[in-house]
Image (cartoon, rainbow, N blue to C red; front, side, top):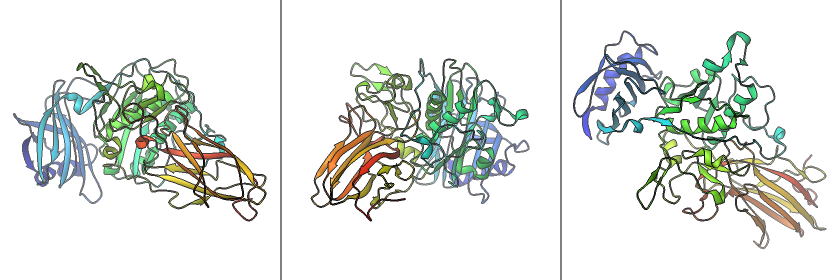
Length: 491
């Protein structure tokens, strides 16, 4: 790497343009050094947080055409961060690019990289639709992004209202007919609702509000927001890598797959492109003969695939497919990025919502409903303990524990264990191969019991998958007969 300048000095160069806001036409060009020469960069889109401690600037080399995220010609520049931690990149042309990063000494360095290292173009091939389903009854689950479309305003969707971090799915530009309110062109409102559901599900373990509401996006500070754009066209989807925390489109998702019947297919693409915006690269393969595959096809025996890999293979595997963030521990992996750790540089993980045992909600008559028995698995080490007691006459349980998010984005394989508290005896364990839900059906003697739900793993990490990426919302439904009086029975 070639040392460029102290971070504070480079920050000071960008600050005047950033202070002028989103269209800093009056700002003078900024000199950006590379290992071979310096370039005059015209900053065309910039901003700063209210405290002035964070800037983000986008632009292009003076005298060249600006390159948008979905274009191959021209030049592009992005730099963002604080005086102590600046990162960014410069694309000089279709063949030449540089990446900038700050060392421990506070000095910004630059290194030549392939253009694909900072701008990705994704060929998803012959992708298929996947049916949307989840734990029934969906209408009982209170989380916004779970359930069927019920006429919500598709321009006001928010998955986690109040979260500081915001990702805007900007459908306004090409799909919403503003003259007719929130009417959409060509595709249905339900289609875009499903697209939003899939992306929200993919980030549900993080404190991220996935929105279609531009006001929610604009209310977030610059460092805490990103924008994913949509176009109805025949080109391939693309993204600027590590662009979250800057203005403008960090990715563009193309919706030209005419046979798509649900929005989950587009949602899977959107989630993949958003992964690039947080700094992720493609999950592929390098084989023993040194041949390569850009997109991993996953593991058919377990119906598993990587979000950053070949989604079209996983999409052929039916309702029990699972797409997950990965750390490259599958066989012949070419990319050992720890996806959750990389995304975690931008987003905080959600806290454990069931840190201590919680009583299983059981209605009079024994009904167990998703509305009251839902939780979130946020990490591989997260487990959710649910407790209940059976009375003197004995009883039984008939429970289904399922991922409650729709198939287009949910990443969970469910593992469930029922234990008799007094003895520690495992009454039943469920983690059926290539079946994402767990089923606990057992007659029970009188006593106290704990049902523990966690993310599942199947096979070995090399020939199956670990519970690293088994993260999503869960819901318990079914029946419990013979519940002890005064125990967990509720009205």
